[in-house]
Amino acid sequence: MSPNLADERPMTQGGAPRFTPTTLEGGAIRLEPMRLEHASLFWEAARGAHEEIFRWFPWSMRTMEDFALNVERVVAEQEKGLSVAFATVVRESGEIVGSTRFMNIDATNRRVEIGSTWIVPAWQRTAVNTEAKYLMLRQAFESWGCLRVELKTDALNQQSRAAILRLGAKEEGTFRKHVITSSGRVRDSVYFSIVDTEWPEIKLRLEKRLAAEP
Image (cartoon, rainbow, N blue to C red):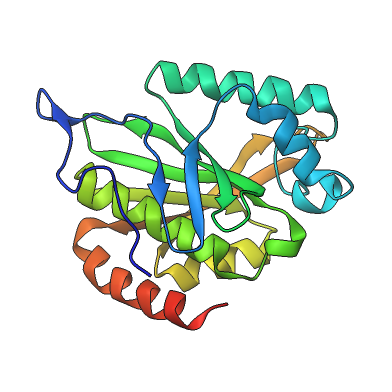
């Protein structure tokens, strides 16, 4: 597995990274920049499993209208430089199996969050999530020159918390009563991070995992 990035050098403008949409190619998947037309494709990919996939999302993802509004919002953020979002595509088949994005971008402080990740059930617990995180972390640290990558999840989502720790991220603490979800539940959020000095060791670990995963 030898993912290719569009540019191995930090892309900067005035001393800060330029967080521009780009396609990230891996061995098993491709992360392609999100476009408005992805809304219907995401809806079809998640059909019949919305409750399972989006159980922990704080916003509603139950109808085609929800998907359209979400994609419109994310694409608008992308145009403002606040997000860089992707459709997750299986390279062999061209099948869309999820989505993920860089969000809460802080170019001045060279900081970004990876989040809003979802994967259809058939592709969960495969190399898809590991490779997506690998590609995005590599992009953040090696192409954009980030100092810090953040991840957060619902405090009740034990599966997500464990997966983030397996990446090698450090748990930093809990933001209490952080988000009011679409159901009205008030969510606590657990924050994690990876910093640039930790990336070389984590990179090697992820490459070993990808070599062993189906």
